[in-house]
Length: 546
Image 1 (spheres, one colour):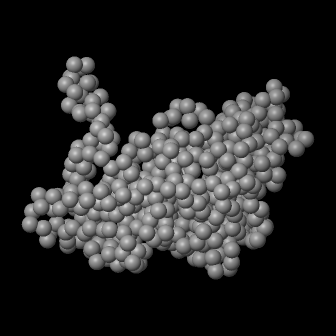
Image 2 (cartoon, helix red, strand yellow):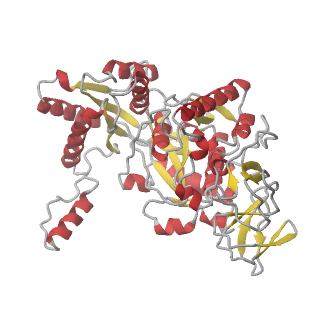
Image 3 (cartoon, helix red, strand yellow):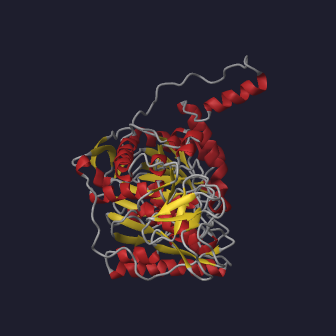
């Protein structure tokens, strides 16, 4: 970032991110008449600028490029005098593909001496992968089994005495019956399986009634979860007549686990003598599976075994200035340590493709990225959508006016290291280093996909606040501003707000956040989403979501 500029009072008010930018970001509400000094030149704001919003540093004519992060993020749809706000009324989405900042082979790895020899306490799997958690998974092949999944969820929680909603149920009884309501819950009992983080139950709306491709994609995604390093084994429920057949899932699992090292139990309701028999058999596999999983204990693993998925949701105008580049700095550190990062949300890379192409390790990787981006855009066009429709009303309200502006900030989550591979939706991680994964911009669909491709820890940045979690992969939430961290402290794990206030440098906070990742991966820190049992799972129906 360029030099920060002070107002008359000497307080930090606004920021120009890159030397080539022709806009600045307001770090607080600025009234009309505020004097701003930028690179020795003074201008006066012609109108109030809300915090997180941008204002022009020069007179922009119709058609002129709006530049932020050193790249084109929009085009003026009418004259924009210096000192006035960049809004949806005077700016539209536009990109440019010339003169990328990045160049192949020129990445400078960060200083990682503080983490030399560092390890985390993980679960070592027979296939050589390492988990940051140890769960037994229960999966439906079709939505018809969702009710049975819920039956199993409640039965298992009751049997283990680990109902995550126990306190809320007590609250409801108290509100209904008063303080003298009878206590029905037994005290929390000693954990029967201390080395297991729990049983995770997936539900979804797919498996039948869609296309063959939808069924195949679902089976590939579920296989990614079944074979995930955080999963000890799985119980799969099938109705029997649906499109997503057991044999399809078995084939997808075998492709990821050719030696059959992961225990998976497949149960078909239409082949069972009764629902009671199905539930009894499912419970038996779950409890036997927990006993097996409990034999595995945490032990030291190198940081190269960590795979960080990075995601943003409920972004605001500060996300691309604090939380996103902070996460990018953590990814760079992990890559330098031999680990991996996965950057997803292809609609939120629109407008910065040329920067990512310039970072691809070779032409083959670059061509794969181009082809997947083009195919996704064509799918979107066929349903009357476009990547430029990605910013939500909340994004726009907080200053992310165009998709390119949102993308330029969102891409910062991937840091600056070379792009080693590009993955299509549901494809497993194959190469260490930074990977790009084709997913929609939808928070949960993308987070679901990150876990499915093998991320064993997810960093999720937010400026407006979101409780999103994942059933198998711990999710750490990073706030872009301190006000959010205070207001939603029950869902935020790390505050990047000091960067905005000029109280901390990204480099120092990146070391702190990486240490938090190590603690979470080791079970020493419980992410807020895990503590709240926030286990979101939404498969992507391709060509529909943006």
